[in-house]
Image 1 (cartoon, each protein chain N blue to C red):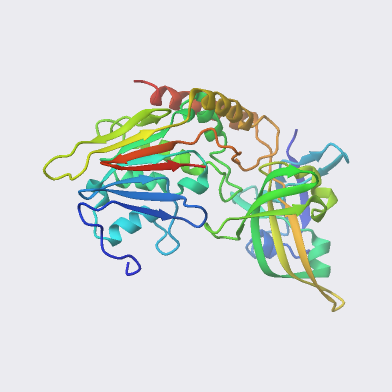
Image 2: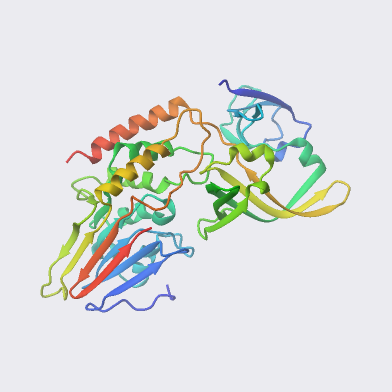
Length: 181
Length: 225
């Protein structure tokens, strides 16, 4: 699959999210491996992408991407956030480990219904998938506030042939070293 | 650290269980200021491997006092900081599950080694252990012991200084468990064009090392999970 390239107009408020410097030009290119949902035939961008300045220099930076429409109309105030890993899917229920965001300790095991996950994300629900679970206030542009719990699956890139080939070569070397007696 | 008390006396046996969950790390005083450490987790207070924090707080030098360090399986949440323990306790024997000696495990671990987009891959610590073992190869460190069913990992005989005979045996994994573990690890190796994910452990754990420790007339069974 070819790398997807998308141009974004900088007039939309991505600046902070993308961590760009003011002097950078208005247009830039972000690239990343898309993933495909075989059920809906839709293609999704990963939620983390590499950015490339339009001056041809690569900042070598990993950036996050947010939907512009969502960030314009809503403001989400996070009260608590966890990062989780799905362990098992059984009878429409997901068993997962969660830990408070940024913490190394205090792992908890939780079970939640697969219905908690947005339909568009459900194809990503596999053992090992990483998600963010946030609880907070969703403040709408019209002044309304709703307390919400949101589970969002991370859209990570795919393993490439090059990466797995490298892993295989390293494994062979290590195996020989540790089995040399 | 003030929350720890005085060290055990030379003829006192002590078992300490640490960790945020179900005892991710265990230290055992075998007598004569000789210790073993089983698995590892990180202290929230010092960000150090908790067993090292504990020994240092008691005024014990881990370099000369730790005789055996055992890593029972590969799951990150049970061995966080293990590479740092290996680095510090350079005279200690190191033992890990014989189920992890297969080439498939190395391939699995290396496949997950460079996932820069996630905080941890699930098998990060074992990759650090490989690195540490390569760095401290002979003559600095003796060959790692492969823990499997009915294998003696450590023997310390009673003498003028040592008040007890000490024997540490591994009871698992058995040959049958190793075969199942190999099948599991083969399934965890990623395929090309599949979405990256975190390596997760399964239950029951067929990799794990159970330990039988005999200190004179006392017997301790440590069953990993």
